[in-house]
Structure formats: structure tokens, C-alpha cells
Amino acid sequence: MDVNELRRLRGLRLVPEDQLETLAKLAGEPVPVEKGQLVLTPGDTTQPAMLLLSGRLQAEIGTEQRILGDIWPGEIFGESALFQKGRARVVGVRAVFDSTVVELHPRVLEAARGTEVMRTIQLNLLSVLAKRIQGTNHAMRQVWHDQHIPDPSPDAPPAGLPRHDETEKPSEMSLTDRLRKQFGGWFDVS
Figure 1 (spheres, helix red, strand yellow):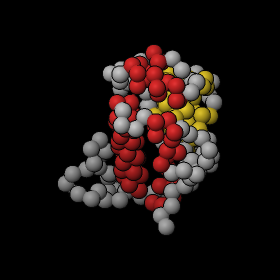
Figure 2: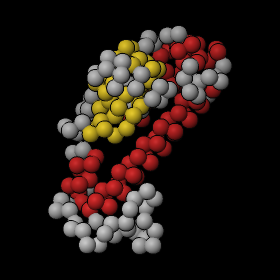
Figure 3: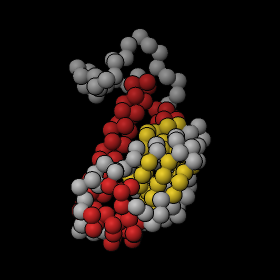
Figure 4: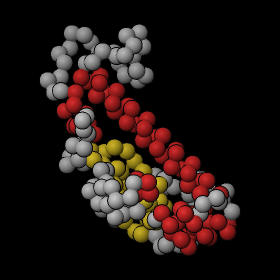
């Protein structure tokens, strides 16, 4: 892998050259991904985490391929493989445009421990996870709103969501079913 590919990514521009070279050697060669190709497959337990070098990807869930969000160059995705070894993936990731990714196996991160590269990767992961949590919170609020469940605080509707009209007919679908529809069949309340 070319160090310049890494240096172009957000967050890696200030990492010392020798550390970028180490990461480039450990990460292996970039993998081209064609538009429409599935990069991570739901149910798979063998794929590593990945770093998007170029292009754009989308995370999707369920048989309807409901879009959960975009993945941009410089973002790490599939990170559950780093923390939950052997656990099946719930979300798929598909290329929106021709893209390039590089695999991040746990051994890559182990070798980077204590370096500026690792600090940058950790900050990247925190940023990505915070963005995903924010998106999930918004989706949950929308489900609650659509279900016509009173807001926790009658005086303060959730930011960005209109107050529901008390005369509207509530949804016939149960809250659990609406959550399953919103987040895919994996949602389980037990």
C-alpha cells in the first residue's frame, strides 16, 4: 500500500511518516470494490474491519436493504470484528460508487499499539460510533413518534420532530414490530 493513500485520509495527515509506513505494510494491499458490490455480508463471521480509502459505501440492514447510513473515505467500518471475535455480522455494507478499502485485522491494531496511528484509529472509531448512535437515536425517536407514544416530557418535543396531533389515529403495528421494521429482524426485546 502507498503511504500517500493513507496520508490523504482525514485524521492521518498529521501522523508521522514512519508510523504511516508501518501501517501501510501491516494493512496489506488495497482492495477495489465495484459499485453495487457487497463489501461486508450479514451473517458472516470471518471478515475483518476495514478502512475506506476512496469512494462511498452504505450500511444496510434486512431483506429490504434499508439504508442505515453512509461511510466516507477515512472511516473504519465492520469494527465489531475487532471486538467481538466470531460473532455474526448484522449489517451489510455495499459500494455506492467504485471504491477502495483496506482490511484491518486485529494484528494490525496490535502492532500499532501506543503509536500516533493507534490514537488516530481510536479517535476515528469514537467519531464513527458517535455518529451511528446519533442516527440510531433519531430513528428510535421517529419510531416512537410514528407510534404516537407521548413524549417523555410534554413540554419539550424531541429536537427536529413535530409534536404529534392527539387526534391522529395511532399505528396498528405494535411498537416491537415497528422497531423490527426500522432496524431489521434482529431487533429482539427479550
